Length: 220
Ligand code: ADP
Ligand code: MG
Image (cartoon, rainbow, N blue to C red; front, side):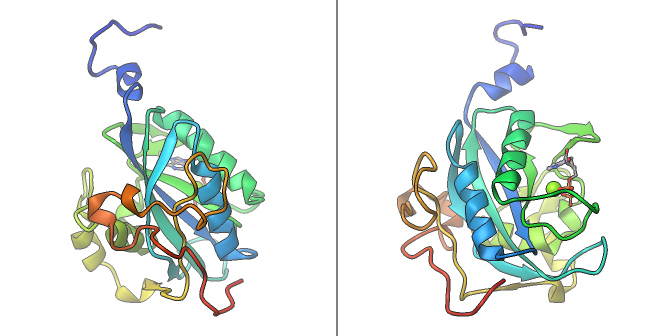
């Protein structure tokens, strides 16, 4: 179906202009920081441009079977893709990091979730946007606040307030670990092409800047 020209509420119209997208990445299997880096590299390019990467947070697992802690980051991006195609890119990024789906909410090399896709809303089993559980997940809110202090989760409120209402113990910063924006186009390793000037202003503090390096602490 072709939407009428000038229909500003049409998803076609919404998808034709670059819009802000918030993505949450997590890994608790294998080389966690390497998996996050692979995911970031895979997301960049092809109508998705990453603009900022949060600091790295270690978090305790929520739900599912007993499993190891996660490393989590939130990335800010702009994209002209509709949310469904962004979801496909998230799945491709998960595959790039070798994700195999076994137990739901079980350990995974990489999980990439859409938290918000501008003002798009979906309420379907395979795509719910804004993410229905983001407001209660410190592993999303802590890195999101880090990269965008003024962030608001539509329908829920300010990310700072939502995080403040959660137990503090579930997520803590890993200052020894850092990920940076990949080279534009996704062709280079994350960290080699850090674009400090490309970060959203609100997230400048934690966006990929100079280093994009890992600290000495082992992280597997
Ligand atoms: P979870 O992310 O909840 O831990 P999975 O990564 O296994 O679990 O995702 C299960 C399904 O959730 C995916 O196949 C995807 O279609 C669906 N899904 C629904 N909404 C979203 C969203 N906002 N972001 C990512 N996946 C989503
Ligand atoms: Mg997921």
